[in-house]
Amino acid sequence: MATPGDRNAVAAITPGVVVVALIVLAALVLFATEPVPVDITALGVMVTLMLVEPISGLLADAGYLAGPVTMITPEQGLSGFASSATITVLAMFILSEGVRMTGIVQTLGEYIGRVTGDSENKQLSAIVGIVSPVSGFINNTAAVAILLPMVTDVANRGNTSPSKLLLPLSYASMFGGTLTLIGTSTNVLASDVAARLATDPAYADTDLHALGMFEFTGLGVVVMLVGIAYLLTVGRWLTPARIPPTDDLTEEFGVGDYLTEVTVRSDSPLVGKKVREALVENDIDVDLLQLIRGDDVFLEPLGPKQIRAGDTFTLRTDRDTLLSLLDVEGLDLTDVPVDEAELEQAEAGQNLVEVVVAPGSSLVGESLSSVSFQQSYNATVLALRRGREVVRRRMDQVPLKVGDTLLVQAPTETVERIDAGREFILIGEVDHHDYRQEKTGIAIGIVAGVVALAGLGVLPIVVSALLGSLAMVVTGCLDPGEIYEAVQWDVILLLAGVIPLGIALERTGAASLLAEGVVASSSMLPAIGVLAVFYLLTALLTNVISNNASVVLMIPVAVETAQAVGVSATAFLFAVMFAASTAFMTPVGYQTNLFVYGPGGYRFTDYVRVGGPLQLLLMGVTTVGIAVMFDIPI
Image (cartoon, rainbow, N blue to C red; front, top):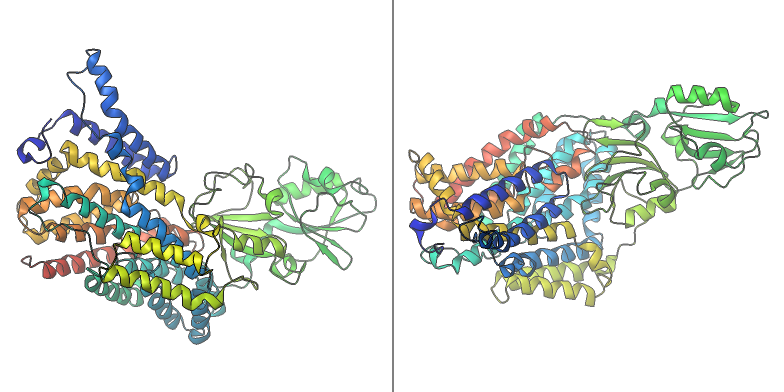
């Protein structure tokens, strides 16, 4: 097979090109449909790429193929684990966690709540004005996870629909991710790919290089300001108010018809039995939420308690099941309406909360039944919301996804444990937090030091970020065990798995062939038009699959295209990088979009309605901005 440097030879359709094209097609389908998590798909792609050459060699020896298919070596296949991009992103998760544990972002959120009052315009302005710059220096996914409870609280206190604020929160965090190299993993990965390509003789005459900390900040500021202006004007008008403002979660989730209280009659066959035997271990769709006995209110675990005459149980069930239960078990309905106040009477703290399934949660793909949620957490799920869909019956077998919102009733101790854990993001603030506020200055100073050392060129970003991570532990901002919990390992595995795919595209010549196709189909367009085409293609691809996978697939093709049309390769790199960092049109295009999907009660089409015009607007702004930066004729 020809080497990558032989530009005429690599543009041929070879067996390697065909095989890598099939692998890319399969990967795109799996990334889009997610029958398995995307990080598992990425690892599968990595292993498949490494198997192609040895298996094809065996087939060639057996006479089934003319010769082995050249793909990637095991060293190249495993290079994603040693990539500076993977290590840098890992370190940035740790740095972001160090800042989170100081509570500084929550303090900013409380300030927003005080100064904005019930003015939706002030709330929106303050939220997007804070999350954008913050997302330039801590991981934007982490920024949204931290601010999500605060934004919901601000909306409820100000009588504003949370839906009007949550989608702008997600979009504004993406604007901030374009400000610096560490704003998002996409930027770090793009820089790493550019640095690797720069060492290839085929790209010796290009301007490719590892990107500096603030190399594209000017363009990022323009994108941020235009995006914020859109959200405050046209975007505000287009964003729907799917969830009405309310202080009652039972009303918000529409579970009122599924909640009731029943009293045990003296002649009931349940008297004297344990709750577990009488009501829990039955094949009926009934959840026991609480037991009221005189002035005492008991929550989970209720199973061991013995039922007495006069006990009142709060139940979650449907009307038909309730009527059959009343006929058999000797129970009487009460006239007390069951609302949030009724479910919050057990303890002084919170008992009824919304929680969102977090990225990297071990519960993703599992059901409430398979993880024994009620027994593990001493908590009961009253409803599950996924976008506009609300499930109120037989939720136990529904596989959970990132962004699913659960309405949970639990003891205050459990609520605090959920808030401190990594499986869920708690919507709404709890009264107790173990923030290390005395470390605020140190944590911010460490992040500033990381940025300064990398920005001034004193240290490579990967070394600077690792040094900062170590400093977070040494100074007590983080405990040693917390650094493992801080890392989103699914993102790390995704990066390690997709990086070899980019190498295979280059090594087989598939990138050159695709670039020739793009140039041929865009032959009537000027260079800036081809640049816009790449932005649009990357944006559309990112809205369907992972942003990191989009970068790996598109950058080699973009660089080849830049050489073909005779303009800066870095210009095309920027177009791909900015497009992959701003996926507005689907809830699956970016993790922050998934975060707000359930809490905002959005429909899939809401992302197209609000994000479509924004995507086109920023395509124009970014393309023109890049053209000005690199002297491409407009």
